[in-house]
Image (cartoon, rainbow, N blue to C red; front, side, top):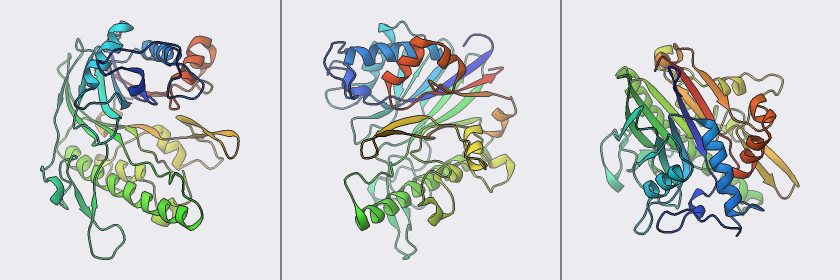
Amino acid sequence: MTDGNLRIATYNVEWFNALFDDSGRLIEDGRPSARYGISRAEQIGALGIVFTALNADGIMIIEGPDTGSKRSSITALENFARHFDLRTRKAIIGFASETEQEICFLYDPDRITAQHDPQGTPVGKKGSRDAPRFDGVFRYDLDTDAAPDLIKFSKPPLELALRLSSGQALRLIGVHAKSKAPHGAAGNEFIRMSIENRRKQLAQCIWLRARVENLLAEGESLLVLGDFNDGPGLDEYEKLFGKSGVELVMGQNTPPDLRLYDPHAAMATGAGLGLSPTTARFWMAPKKRYFEALLDFIMASPDLVARRPEWRIWHPWNDPVCLATPELNQALLQASDHFPVSIDLPGL
């Protein structure tokens, strides 16, 4: 944005990687994309419409294109930005993931300078109980047997230090926490795996929370954003552990100066009439219907909340502008199974 506000967004793009060849060039043809019933050209075109409409200064992309021996997330994203003449034409990643999906940040270099700036001690596989660097291992007892479990991220959170053109410093942590869905399991095995996945997801969030507290104690301006595969009241297994991972990261019961805030999480936590925003839409084959969930968040530090920012979920039906703009409405449905979330920060 150019009106004195800074717009930061988070967007989980389903199988973005499948839209590029090994050289990072877009495959804009009529063959099927990894999204059911949508061609690669259709998904690419839809993403171009969504990214253009977002008009963000920086976008945390969850499930971004792969980085490895043959592929480069940065090359692919910068080619994508060039193809659609986006302001957000510079890309950065952190530690590469074990999957074909990376956490990436695409930004406008005229407004933002970004540096990968991981915090914590590098401990590798031996692990540490003291919130180590996110590419390492966190030793944490998940099941109260006095023996620490070894927790790691398949997609290490992306820690960025930003310097804005205004001179303001801002820290971002991009997150893709572990999915809780035990695909292919049934009966008692489904329950066991669901609880195990919930424990691992909560341990990742405890690790994240330790980093958040350190940064807030140092007076940093901070946004934690991305896909948590979790949210207040999302499933029945939350009752076993008292609260969701999202609430843990936000520091619900900590002093006000150490809390993060997201209005959509707050709505879900206090929803007494079943009123809750959603950021993702999935097809459930056994039930033959779509299911919606609140999975994507932008959590802000107290100093940023004091600026009275505006959060927005770019939902094709629940956002009035998206609903009233047929081209954007259709593009949001074709581009991904998640919808973007943005925050406009005044005076930055």
